[in-house]
Length: 275
Image (cartoon, rainbow, N blue to C red; front, side):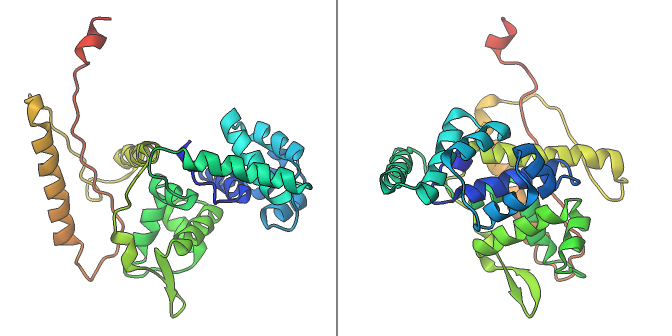
């Protein structure tokens, strides 16, 4: 639900993110496919997403149901629609007040939809790193081909990175800005879980399709003193920083890689073993 926490975003942002997610799962999925699933004509959906046509609350409820939103998500989606398109001013004000109340009642630090997506979808960081390698091309189709994503997903990701000033165009060429190395604060756990899950799946894929010359995936099993976990994490963090400092300053980068270190308990918790 964290992706719904920042209500300054419009309902169109939610539709675009849903379309992007579906394209990410199936590169052949398209706006036409999305329109079919929402029971709208492609032209009508295109007009809605570009702001040329609005929605009624009834239409918004139908879309929310077809997407599979929870009741809470559907209420937010419909209020975002009413805030813009309700015919009566009172209905617009009521929707805005509900959204404001929900926003103010959040107890954790919130991120915009754009920030949440960048943290939770691996290809944003990969695009930023791609801009640093030799032979990089600012062509969307080249970027999509290099990362194995659809052009639609690549376009949406680049637009999002631009909005957050993480990427810019210099002399007609995309380039990561100095801001992208900064670590965001208040990261929702759902975003991190999604990000790490995606990269772990990438590692599994690499075992199957990459040669030993292209990868180094190793592991070790050891008996460990549980109370030293904090110390172990610090060692791993120091290793990552040292690795980045040593290899990250190269001027001849030509590939984008992922470094992942896994260190976790293999035993079941005692209370689970007793069940």
